[in-house]
Image 1: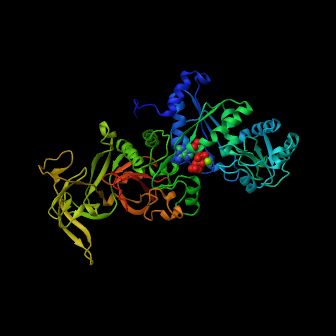
Image 2: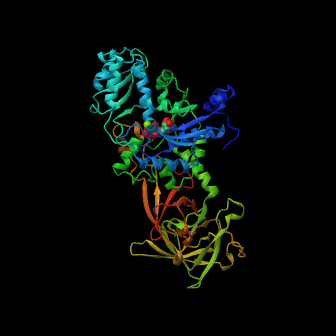
Image 3: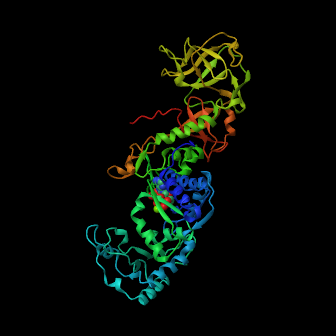
Length: 551
Ligand code: ATP
Ligand code: MG
């Protein structure tokens, strides 16, 4: 992360506020997820921004669950959100819920009713929409708009008391039916919904709308900088109107461009469809753009924070290439992942001049990027080993620097071998390769004087462990599935998951989920969180190079 990078526009605002002594120089942000799904990489952007600002300017960040819609919200989501924010490396000052303020919000609403600034409307949603007018024509007041204050107080209390069915009435703010801003044309503050809430249970049957909950929650918590995405710009005048009428703490709203990532979808509604309709295993499927999916895939918190830092904070919507995210994890894992050998498409190599039944222990370092290699591990070597099928050619062309008949190659951390002959099955497929080795060519003490151009990885057959290896590709085959004709699910990449069985170094049996391994020449992998000792499962986090080609 660059210390010297220039300020983003929100940091500029914050620094101006601090130098102007606004709020006594205090910076208090909040991250306000609705607990109706798992967090995704777009939320990570918002988390890094909100928590990052507070860290930078000695402030605080609240984690506030925006739980005003009882039908879609659940405590499972609350728990996952907390886990994900912590995993990203942030700790909140206070864990709060918009539902904590239901009593207070109700009192605020009554206050507006009593000021003549809110009224109960019996119209249907269709009537309300029609009476609202259009952006070029003003709305028309209906008969309920001129209800007497006492009547409104009584009706609103009755709404709360459960006297009316869902949808029978709403409470609306009396702002301006002619405003060019449609959000100010008497917006709905409360609706009737006889639904059990994940925290308040059956206590309430009226629930505040986003616009009457969010700003007031910010003000109650004395949030200084309330940061949201661009689509809330037209809500800002209403945000300020409520705060002014109620004479609350003057929180201010600032908007930045949401993160859009190509080859995926980000809306929780769409992600939920992928889960519910079985296109993916669950919210934490390693192909999902969710934080839990990225974690299971092997992404590190540092790589995600670095990605958010690199994309910056924009004022205009744009599409970020997922290749940048992959670049960030590659950079991180190159520095931190331990090197191991795994053969994913095996063919047997027999070293005919190596004594039968003999095993020796070779040595390999864990991480060549770090001074001292971060220690190392023992690698058993024997007469029969697995190598990759693609690393052998019976009749090698020029510039093939791997194994061939008559061609020599180094086995990583081991010896130089020379191909001699092959064994084939009835269909002509190679089932075994025979070679000889040079005993004096052992890595680290090579006195053979023989030079070879290539090095290949391998695993000793009697010592190898079997593992299921999951190779992931992009979940969608088009850049912006939400913007294509028809249903976005028609654009799912049918080859987004390939499951194979491979052979791995025995020492990988001690791997833990989240620890990154570079399978030499094959990519970065991590143990799947549901892997068991009886059935090891590794997920490919990312390939070693950006080898993705548009199909
Ligand atoms: P979705 O549309 O995916 O359901 P949301 O905005 O409804 O997202 P919330 O839980 O309400 O999800 O969002 C919590 C916070 O995260 C909000 O402040 C929101 O602006 C921010 N956020 C959501 N998606 C993105 C994104 N793609 N980029 C940046 N910030 C985002
Ligand atoms: Mg939302």
